[in-house]
Length: 560
Image 1 (cartoon, helix red, strand yellow):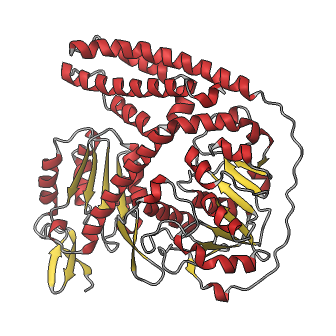
Image 2 (cartoon, rainbow, N blue to C red):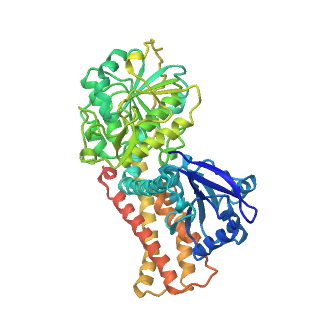
Image 3 (cartoon, rainbow, N blue to C red):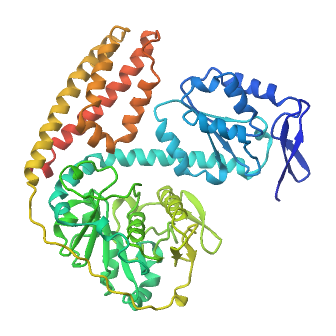
């Protein structure tokens, strides 16, 4: 049953929204005095300091007015309002308040809330206490939107943990592989030179989802009518079925990606790779190379000119592939095998080699498929789905995206289409022009110099950590100890290798310690335990940086 929302005047002459469903009405603010109600609510959270606060329920905005009136918002890092109902409007005055205090206050409607958008807030305020508050009147409402908001918040928390774990797992590879790729990146075609090269053409993006096998015959019959872009995991299936794609794409830095999906492959077409792609793939590729800079790669641009990279990072190779296709100027894009769900419990299509990470995947969430039914998916695939949808939403209107997956997740903005009604149109052959490149870079010298700088950073971190270890051992930290702690941290932060390379790939660790320092006012008087808490966090940060430095310096790939 649907609800309605109307307005009514309170006894204090304030407009209040009234939620009504099945004959039951619930005012979203007090009909007696919204002001006093807001003051009581704020009294409950007035003890919170340096928190990231989420308030579920905006109502008529009285909470916002009282937050500003009594300056309570200033004592916390940020306050995010989440409003479940689109019918609840924000006044022009309140809109101006959000604009003028955007560093401290913001609002999201449920329709704009996703695990990705909420994760962005968590990323910004990581390391600070997070408090979730529900407007007392909204707690009285029995509506799925309230529960859905809380579920998305939980999804965002889980998503952030996945991203953090990924950074920790691949931090070393994300630094080493660009160094090993320098000699290929130097000579590869730079992707910016292919901007709009295929204007008006049609492309098929082939992913490795369970439905891929259902469209093999379609791909075989239409390989001369479309440009076929295939993600690495699906390449072996196409070649085994006599289909040679135009382009294969790779972004993953891990050796498992090479060993599972590329090793032993005989493919002489064009490989489009990001600079962090596992170097074994580029080393063993027999065809042309096209390179795109990975968003967080600040190593390659130091040695190779005119590198272009997409502004937003790509959490999956399929999303990277769609970005490439759009960059190339294609007007129609057909998605094959892009299920983003587990179909009959399968993650990959038959014939795709599985690696350990996907051998025992289980349903974690439910999404809607293109038949309107619920289908199970993983949290990782849900991240990819939301990223796909956000990307498609921002595309120009003259670019059409079609999805051939009937049982996979519905992708908002991608129209489901049956392969039988897709017309055949001869594709125009586009020739990639390339100038032969000479070897101008001494990649061995680059690796040696990078290792030298890393050793220098490690020594600097070790000395700063040694001072912290002493303070932790005696468990007493005074205000007199802090200037040196801050001075050491400031000097280490200025190290280019740390700032531009290591922390570009461990964003959550840097943001976490940086936020703690921002919220720590050295002009104030703190107890020894408060100083000690900060020291312990900083010691963990130094330990992690030192560990990564050692792992990179001793890695056999660089030694070879």
